[in-house]
Image (tube, rainbow, N blue to C red; front, side):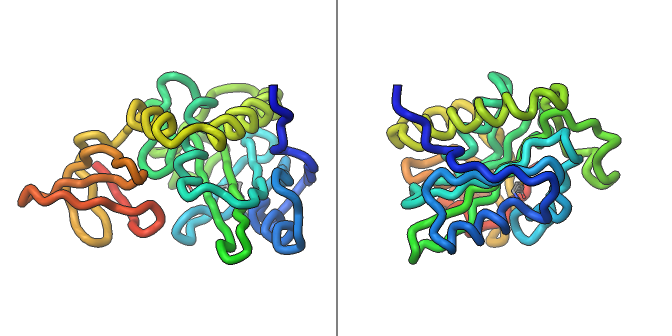
Length: 229
Ligand code: BTN
């Protein structure tokens, strides 16, 4: 079996504002591929589109890993790995929200410096989060794996293994896994540029959407702000 490279070296912090911010600093200073930052408590977690990410101390898995030469479909790779951790019933709301029973159990934020060939992949998973631990505004949409605080570390190890496997997997396997977990299939979606019905993920990892007039458009991850329902 290949030697696992993700997670070495590892910096574990009792408290940090954002593991992504810390990992970006390390990446910019030349940290090696696989360098991992984890925290028991994250006080100012960053989410996509400038949102914040709330993670109750000791009950959520909070990690950021430095990747050198990251793949183009990194957000989808991360979604496949997190969905595997979350179990057979987990679905992926393209590009990378992982849902269990329709509720978001994990968030993924990939940030990078393409010109310097690195990315920081940040992942937060509600491993043992209780709804009362979360801000009231999240209780209607957030979910949890329903495990115990003692499961956070084993979940980290499983996630790193899954991530490493999906980083090495051929694109067609990755896309097949995501298509099998597609939470948006045939659902109505809205994005900055319009609205339509989701018709699956194309070979480039884009979301195909059919507008009311029948025209199909392919949306790029990262370029659209999607809402569904
Ligand atoms: C989202 O769904 O908006 C993405 C949330 C990503 C949260 C994780 S928690 C670990 C890492 N550090 C951060 O500051 N954000 C990511």
